[in-house]
Length: 180
Image (cartoon, rainbow, N blue to C red; front, side, top):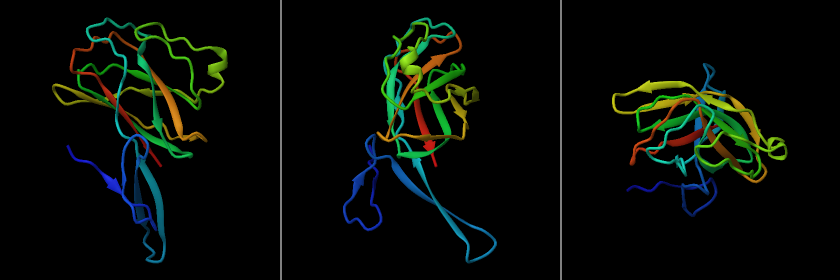
């Protein structure tokens, strides 16, 4: 297993990239003019294995797919990509519901239901419906361009399936975000 460390500018200590400190990546774009350089930061959140998924359970469209989870994120940014790693080769549309504050989760494999109070903290829903089939697995992707502000540096999430998933043991999916 490899570990990734990074060093912030002006800091002499190494920080391990992980759930508490996502990996910052500097992207430098140079236009045709040699004096013009644009730098932006791209954060790749560590992938999260979706917690609480019942293996061999029969899901139905509209069911909570797993339980609540969260991502550590910058205070503000734009989610440019959501990547869903589908080890079970299902390729079924998922809706990622994001919240700016902690919320009461829906139980796994139950019809997704959120209170009015929690709904006030919801961000727009991200639909993952573009899947690339690689034979024994699939990669799902969404490109929402969703700007957010998270003073707590955390986004809370829960997935909703829009089909009849039946996940095999050892094939629990993962998810990560690309934030610019």
